[in-house]
Image (cartoon, rainbow, N blue to C red; front, side, top):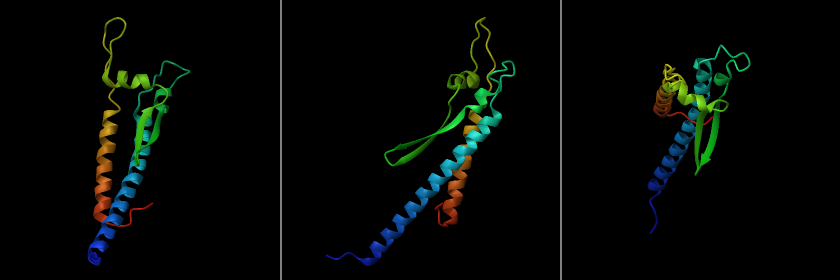
Length: 133
């Protein structure tokens, strides 16, 4: 039995649309990750007491790109002082039993870039233009 040409045309259109959306998401994820790293570098706390390592925590933010089963993941992490992220974000106990104040700097950036990513993808889909590079 022969297939209807209109069904094939619709399937081709939908496949093209899915490819366009996928390329839009991939480009926007990469852009947002770069913006997130840039903002984290500017908003991270700097230890002003230590001369040699002044700003090494802030300079350590990097993007790690992983390909898993056809999906692309961009992970923003601190490559130099990864141990400090949790301690600075949440606060911690000192040796003398006192507690340090939390310096919340990661959560606001994560929330901002997540909202910006959703907004950009929605706008790109609404425009319906060619989503390629």
